[in-house]
Image (cartoon, rainbow, N blue to C red; front, top):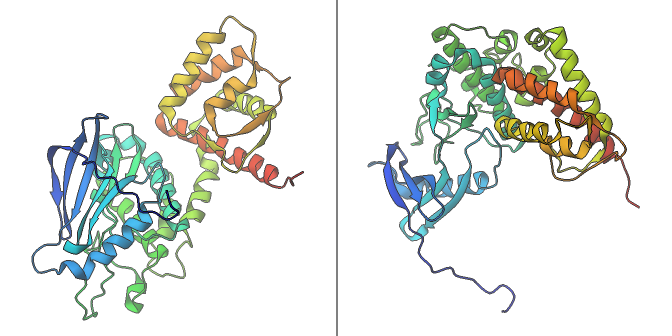
Length: 370
């Protein structure tokens, strides 16, 4: 085969139609099933409504695919594939199917989880900010929470352009959620700080509808400041404030903090170094299953090697002290506690471990080769 030879996969891929999911100004969305792998996907077709020229926004649709095809984050809908038909100025996008509720409906059902939902939402938008991607269509229906209580940001407003009231072009006007707009709209500015404002307004609205305790009210006030210059600067700053918020310790008793700190000390005392791609596992259900298995396999022992515990929480390469051990009774106590915690408490435990892992990663990154 010669270099740069075009390779064509001519085999047809079939999906089974399950149901309609909805339609908007720029397309129709349906649920499909790949019966070969028994997996469901959302398929969105770029199909503008009558009165909107396909060619005017087709390139925007393609540009969004180029961006989102590379996005990979637990709080953002995943794009698996795309099919483009440039000769017809249309295309299809194959995405993750999220079985759950929109953020408002979810929090009406599970108001006790509002702090965790806020944290996850900020985490997702912090990632988008880092990748320089603007969502442009923030509203309750575009932030879902699945049946595992995981936030998923969806619908990035394919083909939509920012349209201000005095703009005479024919771009589609986005109906901003809540009606109120920030001061920078007067200067035709739309940035990540604008999205901070709209996320803040969204949660302000939710708090008016849901009777629950929200511990980030001071952060929220900084987010919804109408003045661009007086508003908090970035989603990453908000996320750091969340992780460093001392009020989280009100969630735990002194005994619970001592159990966590004992486990955390053994955990990080066993680590020698981690690689740049090393990540903390954030799938709570998976962690609990693995901890249960390890507890059953070691409950008749006094000690267990650190690698068995570390591999439950860490992905990719890491090195550990082979002469270190975990006390099995401490592991059992931590596992029982972690399983008993609320979803919010479990997330705080993982956020704290993630922060300490960042410290280990920064030290490891200072090492030089050879």
